Image 1 (tube, helix red, strand yellow):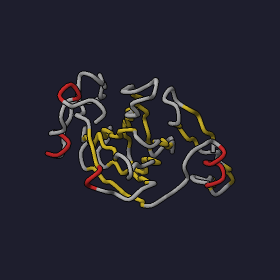
Image 2 (cartoon, rainbow, N blue to C red; image 1 turned 135 degrees about the horizontal axis):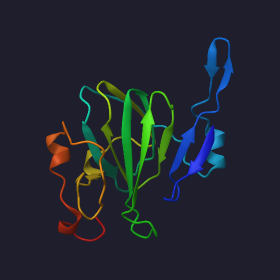
Image 3 (cartoon, one colour; image 1 turned 60 degrees about the horizontal axis):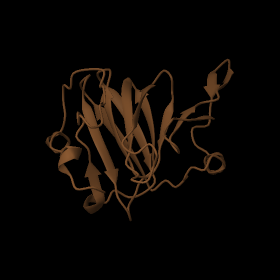
Length: 181
């Protein structure tokens, strides 16, 4: 695996190192030792799968607070998505900054999301499927979210939103929240 740290400390794009032969190729997608060597938390508490019917579907922006903070390893296994993470660590020099990465079945790229980062994505194709390896159990009482088009964040989604859950559409804008939430 090839680990490339983004401008948000601790967040990595992970590309496969393919070993091709006449059958196709082989590649490792996860290795506890390699993750630890890069300072990443290799714990996997849950593996989740998300399937999205329509291009333009938006899921997110979700994160969990202590004591249930999550790491995530995101990979698109069918179709394509635009994946966005936002640094929610209050003492971080990149607090509230974000990056966006295109993850596709073709590029086989993954995004490692550290603890206290909000995460969401928009589907770029119909029938997009996404896998998540998550480092903590889903704990509803510690879940938080950001509004996908919050002007404080300035995220530029590539497509108009075609589908979004009621819950994701209802997250409060940052300027309306008390500090440290």
